[in-house]
Length: 165
Ligand SMILES: [Zn+2]
Ligand SMILES: [Zn+2]
Image (cartoon, rainbow, N blue to C red; front, top):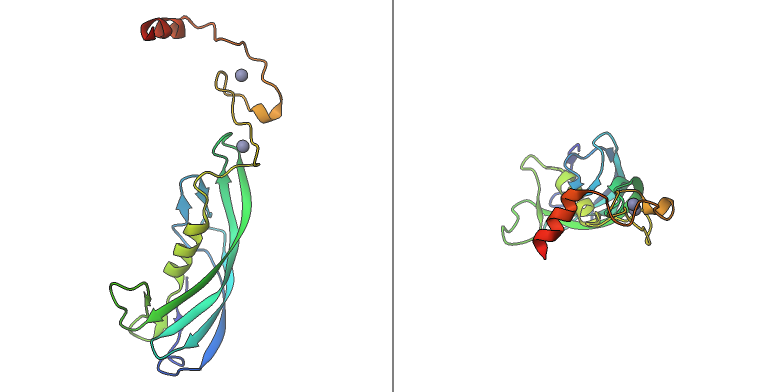
């Protein structure tokens, strides 16, 4: 993500500007969720000069590709996430501000990545009542009642069951 020149806002409390972003952000992967790297993340960021640094706020939106945690089907979902973060020239290492670049620019990429990763679901479902896969044959139970045999006629399983008794 391109850095934003903020020399006009630094040390200038009360000054502000709005910047549009529309770029892919690498590294947006979490388990069953993924924002493909050729998909842009878009938004409008409001930058405001404060005595402590620069406040960045706005809404970031895009599409994520999810795999259903029950049936493994892939599907897309739109997301939008609000951000409101302080960027400081010499951030407190214990604090949660982001760092301004020394030459007076602000790179929003890490902030955007952190915010989008937080909205990614750990267990996405293609539909709230997804029936998942048949535990015997692996068929998609959303497509209808499974007609596979009640018990697999596989003697290896029978042998295993004998061991467990
Ligand atoms: Zn599903
Ligand atoms: Zn089945």
